[in-house]
Image 1 (cartoon, one colour):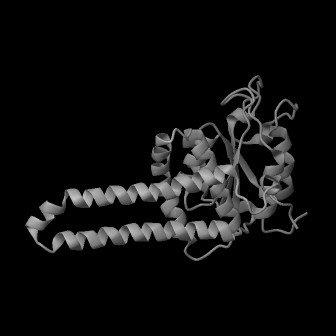
Image 2 (cartoon, helix red, strand yellow):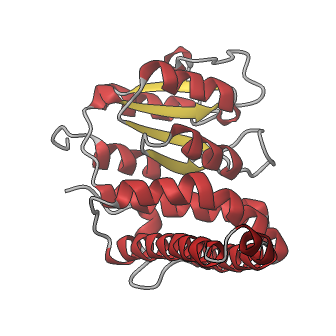
Image 3 (cartoon, rainbow, N blue to C red):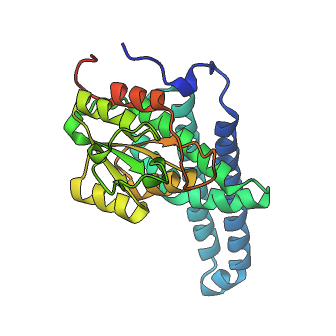
Length: 266
């Protein structure tokens, strides 16, 4: 039996603060959307009434139904998160939150002076929970691990542009530590120099699951771009700042592989 996700070892029933940031913004987005639609209806009320007396009421019913539908979707999404059980309606809910509500959450977050990176981190954490709840069981040759180039030591003369097996394993960065995991499970791993190249790899191969290591901005945008392909995001560590000599928690990579690979654990 695979070990628990290292990020969840100290978490019981209380959600992490980052998750609460996401949930707060998600609910508040619905409130803002409801208020905005109501004022739109009020501003167009007289014009609609001039066209036909019953038209304002009809449009109002349609808009109210839309608001209630979005609210129900958010409630069901939160229900899946809290209960930790996947459902047949999880796909459209993930699409609603990922494609449409998350960009609005970033805008709303600015009103509360919440850093965009913090919102992106919370989005990655919630996405990972949804991926885990989904209970993936994927054959190794249908999984791709994507690494950022900044994981390689900045002074290394051997610039790895795609295949990390070119690494000389000098020990100055963690690239060499990942190779044994690839050999053990026979999983493909590519280095992406940017989001455009990462999307190109995924579009060409169309994997069943992706394990991606990157900064919050690249991970959040990658999760959105790859949808509906499930992406398990691992936030890198940046002791020297962004895009230079970053680090990654190897336990997180190992955990993700062990829990997504459909072969018996070794």
